Length: 253
Image (cartoon, rainbow, N blue to C red; front, side, top):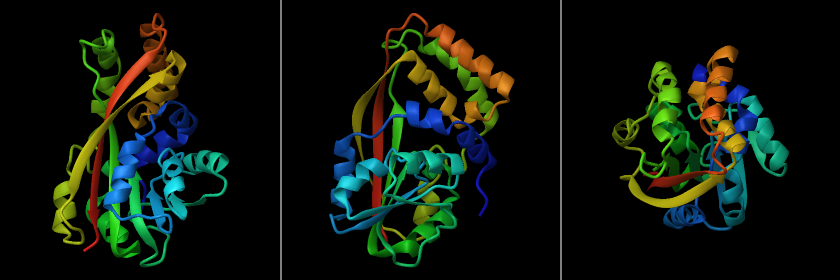
């Protein structure tokens, strides 16, 4: 299965920015999903679409082994540079390079919206052991115009490019119905946690640069957008971004 060209191009260009600027996940959320999926220190788990290893490094203390699968070479290189003991493989959610019944759980951080749900669900179920678990995590900013005075101007600067890039294959919750229709998994459970990211202006600009719909712009457009963001924030000593981390989990039927 081919990778969405927006992801291939954008994340290929912005791997270093992704590692520098993207948030991690709250430890409580990781602990909760691990507990609900019955993952133990003897478990072997897969971090699917692992990126630069933001989620991988949080899973490592809880399990025997983490296998990372990431289709973008530049992202995979960032991961292996920081986590040299982790096996990092080239592959997609729709074509996972693992044997049947080979992992006890599959985790996906900030990526399931890129997947073609039906095909990905079949592949995830194939590599999971009997009653193996699937955990999905997303960080969603919860900032408001009231607590972030520059937010409206920032959105005016960047969101036109998000609209122009088009919808994700399974964005806006469009993955839940087709996942249920596969009948490969139990009903999905959901909880959430909160955390806060503190960034310098340069780190925040790196985060913006890592968004696929910014990274996929032409060199001239991207440079102009990032310059506008930097100018907007030049008076800020620190950028504070509050997040809600949505966590979903289910088990293979």
